[in-house]
Amino acid sequence: MGLLVTHLSLADFRNFERLELEPSPTVTVLVGHNAVGKTNTVEALQLLTAGTSFRRPSPRELVREGERSARLDARLEGDGRVIELRCDVTTEPSARRFSRNGKRCQAADMPGDLMSVLFSPDDLSLVKGSARLRRDELDAFGRQANRGYANVLAAYQRSVEQRNRLLRDEYPDPSLLDAWDASVSLGGATLLAARLRMFTRLAEKVSRAYEAIAGGESLSCAYRCTLGEGCEGMGREELRELLLERLAANRPEDLRRQQTCVGPHRDDVTFTVGGRDARTYASQGQQRSVVLALKMAEVELAGEILGSRPVLLLDDVMSELDERRRAAAVEFVGGGIQTLITTTNLGYFSPELLAAAEVVRFGE
Ligand SMILES: Nc1ncnc2c1ncn2[C@@H]1O[C@H](COP(=O)(O)OP(=O)(O)O)[C@@H](O)[C@H]1O
Ligand SMILES: [Mg+2]
Image 1 (cartoon, protein in one colour):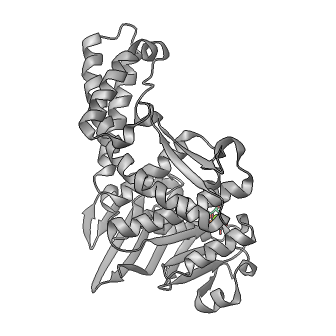
Image 2 (cartoon, rainbow, N blue to C red):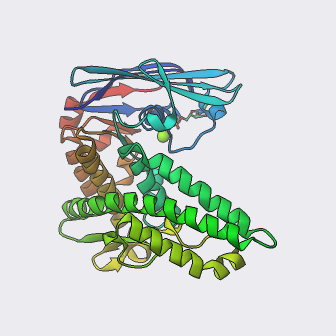
């Protein structure tokens, strides 16, 4: 069965002086006008379950204006366990402190109990936006699904930064560059192997979900590796050797551009809808279906990897979907997964869904 969020409590967080929320084990609909704190509530849950928020806020932004500290608490219950997650935010010093059952921990330790999958209007630019958005989406999933992922990613990013710094020197020392090539290729191969393992499982689920949403139209997604084709089948050592080789071959170009141009920090994901590249050709409706399918696939894969279902956070996306896609989303939500949906308009939901859901009105 896994864990459910049974209580969320916020104090001086964003626009809330206090908020106490007891989400339903199934669907909770948060309804209210603009700027009443619906997205803030979703953000709080993401912060507690993932250790990060999609808005990448500073402590000052999280603490209610005029206050110096905020506190966020969530209680998770299930399988005979109770887990208390807490985040204390202070402006002076500017800091976030996490704890789990009263014991201090790092942000990177917060995932692992309960995964959260967020779908917000910002995600609708995933298909046509920059490659960074698609990489970040994969990495955000990886961080939650696998405890070691965040460290591997951070170590790799640090070594790329160091190599780039050296490339910007007037006369970079070749032997120092050799050392950074070794470090980048080791970290890059570890990251790439983890990403590819995850991506392969995700891609197959995205295609299946898309066909269900789009009624027979097909979608395939592929990982575009700066190392070239065929990386999916390689092990970490093979990837490391290949990356090391490519870094050496690309060094003159990297020196000219003063940055590292090969490696997983430059990779991308492509979506092909009905045989055509979605980035160029997909209609707005098709883009929305791709993103919805991706989120559904993440929920499914999270369940497989962690052995329990994640909590689904749907922030104001119903208004962005047309009737058919909304129906697909609602049907998915009806599948028994704990879900928080925010909306300005209850008219998007069927009477059956609303009757079964907990409806919480904000700003009244
Ligand atoms: N640190 C803060 N202190 C006070 N108010 C804040 C803070 N951060 C955000 N807000 C307010 O929260 C509101 C937005 O809340 P949000 O959850 O995005 O609204 P919505 O219900 O439309 O999703 C805005 O009015 C914003 O000014
Ligand atoms: Mg909002």
